[in-house]
Image (spheres, rainbow, N blue to C red):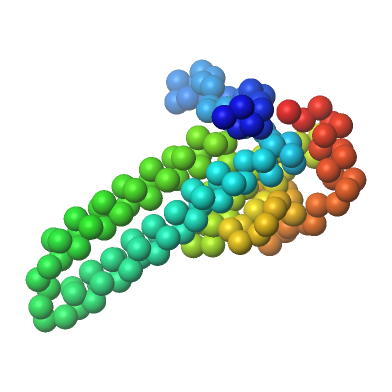
Length: 166
């Protein structure tokens, strides 16, 4: 418990958006991680993301079964499949909420791609991790996606800690 509390600091970045009336409203703060904090969070993130990938596969299988039933001449059992799919979708949403509560962002349900916001060279970027990777080894610009991943080198790690990033 103490380790988790130490891994997750209070620092967040605040954003504001214009409402329809033209006033400013605060948007949910985005958690910023250091390289160390993000890696410290991985054991928990890995468990939740593993469940998300499995739950997504289960939901996809149910939806494929439903599609086949609709195409067949015997559509009986669709109501039961719909109930199962609804339960599966609800569980998937609960798991996604867990990821968001940690402060990271789920980018791909099938592969378990996760981004952690951080500061690098004075700008927000993502630390990037995918289920199956042992640790966080890549980063990318906010608008680049995982295709724009760069390997994290020692200079990145040192700058990430020294920059005053939480």
